[in-house]
Length: 344
Image (cartoon, rainbow, N blue to C red):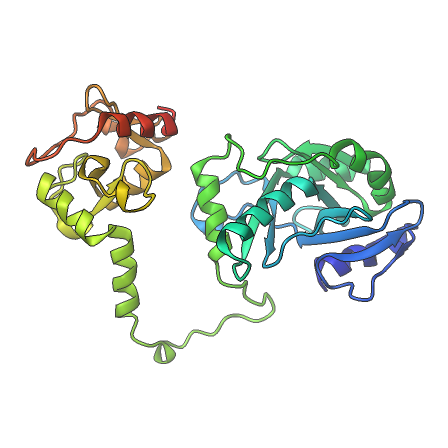
C-alpha cells in the first residue's frame, strides 16, 4: 500500500470518519474528514531512518521523509493541502503515527526545484526530525517539534488527526514558507538530499537484488566520464597544473589525484579564471567544497573547521599554501568569499 492509502486506512478503525477518494493511492488525492469544513489534499511518504547510506554521518536518532515529486505539489484554495509522513516501522513506534509538515514550505521548495530543473526531473525535499518527537506522540497522543528548516512538525496518533486539522493546522501550517534553503542547512545536509534525489529506486525489501557480473557491460567509458567530471573542466585543470604543479594544501604531485577546485562556485565560463582556482587533491577538494577547509586571504594560510579537529586534517591548520611554481596567486576577494561561506 502507498503511504496515502495507509493513512486513509488507519483513520476509520479509530473513529475518524474519512471518505476515501477514488484514487486513494495517488499523491495529491482529495478526501473528506467529518468535522472538518474543507476537503483535504494529501501528499504522503514513509518515515525512514537517518539516511546514513548516503555516506554522510548523521545523528542516529534522526528520522525523515523524502518528499519526492515529478509534478508540483498543488495548492487548492478550496482544500487544505497536507504533507504527511506515515510511520508504522516497529523500530520507531509501537503503534502507527502520522507526522505533518508545513505544506506551504515543502511545496515552495519542491515546486521551485521543478521550475529550475524542468518538470521532467525528479526532485525532493528532505524533512528531518528526531525520534524524540515520535516518542512524545506515543506518550501524549500528539506532539509538536521542528525540522531542520526551523518549521513546525506535528506527530500524532491517527485518532488525533481531526485535532490536527482543526487546531494545529491553522496554528502551525497555514503560513507561507520560504522557497529557499534555510541558512542553517549544512553542506552535508544539502549533499545528502542531492544524493537521495538522484538515487536509484529503492530495492524491493521482499526480494534481494540479483547481481550478475556477466550481465554488466564494460563500464570504462562511464568511469572515465565520472573521473573527468570530478577533475573539472580539462582546460581549467590544465592551467592550474601548469601554474601550481602540485596540490596547494598537501604538496602532492600525483597528477591523477589532483582536481580543479573553484574558490567561488562554478557559475559559467567566467568563473574558470586562474585566480578563482586551486589545485587540490581529491579528498581536500571535497572538504573545501563542504566548507570544512578554507584559506585566510591575508596570510594565504589554511583554515581547518573544528569538525576536523580529531582528524589527520587538523595538522593543516595555519600551514601556508604551497604555491608550487608560483605562476599564479588566488584572488583575495574569492578567498574571502569562500571563508565567509565556510564560516571559518
